[in-house]
Each structure stands twice: as C-alpha cells, then as structure tokens.
Image (cartoon, rainbow, N blue to C red; front, side, top):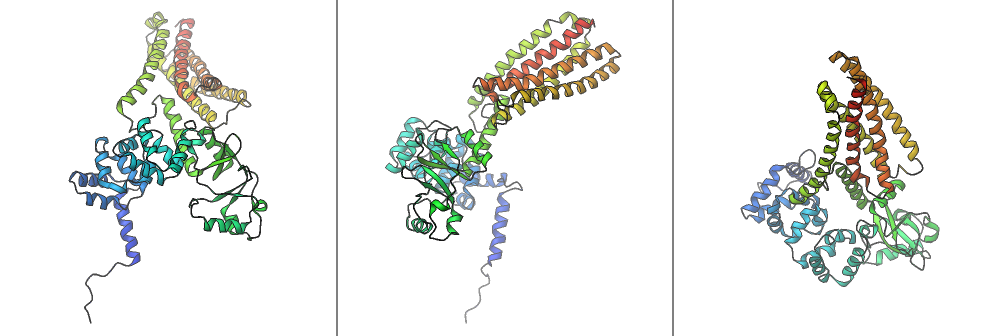
Length: 475
C-alpha cells in the first residue's frame, strides 16, 4: 500500500475561501484595486518578471484590468500592456477610458486592433475605432474581414453620439408566420446567431419590426402557438439618427431592457440594450456637471495641455465678467470711501446671490436635460422659482439685516443690506431659470453657458443693489 501524501488537495469549500482571500487582497472595501496590488504589478513589470505580473493579473475581471491600466502612469502603460500580453484583450479595451485606450492602441499593430474589434459587438468595436486617427482607422478597417468591416463602416456613417453609433447589429428577428416551435428549432440550429439576447423581434416581409417577444415567453409557450399571437405589438422604436441622450431618456421613461433601431424607411437595422444606456446616462450626467463648472471633459487622464486650454478659455471669460462687476463697484467709490464698512459687507450680498442662482440653474439645467421642463410648463416653473426666491430672499434679508443692525449699531445699514439681499435673490432665482431656458430655445447647450451669465447677473446686481441703495439711503 502506498503511503498517503502529506499534503491533501483542498476541498471545494476551501478553494472558495482561498479565492475570496485573494480577491480581498486585491480590492479594498469599495471594490477598488488596492494601491499595494497595483504597485506589486508595476514592480514585477519593471523587474521584467512578466510571469509574475501575469500571475497577479490573470484572476482579474476585464473591467479590473482596465482599472489597473488607468491607474498606471501614462509613460508606463504601453510597457505594462505588452507585459500582460493577451490578458489585455478585446473586453479590456472596451472597458478602458478613452484617453487610456488611445495610449494602448498606439502600441498595437492594426491587425491586432482589427482582431480585437472582430471579437466585440458592433457598438463596442465602433467605440474603439471611432476615436482613432483617420489613417490608423483605415488601416484597421482594411485588416478586418469584409463582413465585420461593412458593419463598422455602416455604423461610422451615422452622426457621433447617435443611436446608429450606439446600436449593435447582432440580434434575433423572425417573421410573424413562424410558430413558437419553429422559432425554437431555428435558435438551436443556427450557430451564427448572437449568443446574448433576451428579446426576439418579429418583422414583416419588408423587415420592419411589428412586434417583440421576450425569450421567456417563447420557452414557456406551446410549440404550436404562432408568433403573431404571442408577440407584443406595442413597442418603442428608436430612429437610427436619434441623439444618444434622447435614447437614454426613452429607456428611462418606458423602463426598457432593449429596443429596436429603425432606419428612415422603418426597417430594422439594429438594437440597443440597457447595458449601453447605463454608460450613456452616467456619461451625459457627468458631462453636464463638468460643463456647468467650465471644467471641460474633466477627465483625469486627459492630456495636461488640453485641460489647460479648456479651463483657461472659461477662466478668461470669467475674468471679463469679474472686471464688469468691479466696474460697478467703481461707480460707488465715493459712497464706499465715506462708509468703508460697505466694502466689507458687499461680498456677502453678491456671494449669497451667486449661490442661490447656482441652485436654481442646476435644477433648471437638469430639468431641461430630462425633459421635465418643457414649453407647456415653463411659465409655471418660472413663477415657482420666483416664489422660492421671494421666500429665501426675505428670510436671508431679515437674518442679515438684524445681524448687521446689531453688530454695527446702524439700523439703516441693516435695512439696506436686507433689501439688497432680497433684490439679488430675486435676480438669482429668475436668471437661474430664465437663462438656461432662453439658451435652450436658441439651441445652445445651457449646461455650457449658463453659469457664466448667471454669476455675472448676481455679481453685478448684488453690488449695484447694495451700493446703490446705500447711496440713495444716504449712508
């Protein structure tokens, strides 16, 4: 009888515990890669120990590998990607930040990029190829199979950030005369169909969608039932040229999982799924917030010179508006010189007005972006914001007026600053909603330009109302 080995194979439950410990050692409590893990991978690459680097990274999900590359210093990304080899595959590329992806793609040959693109759904492949230089893009397309190339070129022919760029062409569509049994046999026998789907589109002879059927309905219904009797005829169709933000709003409004995309003649050309919409909603929301602050794309991976150019342009505009506000103060130099405390108090009025205007503007921009603020309720919302501004202005005016009157022992000064606070809050409330609405009516993105105009209005009117009232009051 042979002797029993000293070390036994771990039981399945022990393997699970080991895997959990390994995952815990790589991620913190917020499921982010730990700094020490990233450093360990970078050290292995620096020491040219590629086997160790691959051993550390291989258990990671593609999204985590993408995070690893994004956390890697810019100058080392190509080196790390080369060390990891095939671990940096198509799925990792599709998860990468746009600027980081550019760094990785620059280190790959067109044939490699074409190979990766062929493994992805059309929408993900387009996301990789669309931002490449035209010459590189053409080289990648020429290296692709004719069928894949035709699909990519078709998608690239649509406007950027449109449904045509967002949709995937791999879907399941069947004619209405088929029965459930025939559809099931078709799905089992056809190996060229997409493997990921949960909805079947029913089309007529002209390939126009006339209904939709969930996969669960097909699997739980008798084989003899016709698809025309099983399908749901009411469906939300997405025009191929619709802006991706509007597409996201439709998914949100109608709680869609997927939707058919149709061309100008109503023919089915693709579908959009909710996983793509989640990215769009996050992306659009982030863009609006950053535009309000004039920070551009606000991507920490964006090249420094691009960030400087974007921020500086808005800072120059803000400098101009600051000079305008300062010129208003200059009109009242005589009043300020007689009563210096006015110079101490006037930033309070303009600052509080700016905060109030920003609050209203943020609500208005979001309401416009989500179609909550439309032509049918604009007047009602303007009156609503006016009432809110009246209430806030009155409350703040009373508080600051009483405080200033007690601190400086001058009731007239308290009345002046209270009135100025009320006036500037009214200006802030009205400009905070009117400026975004007017810009939207002029087809100008209110998220980009509203902040400059609103802060200018509150600064100018804050100084003018406070110093003007002080002059008229004879302080």
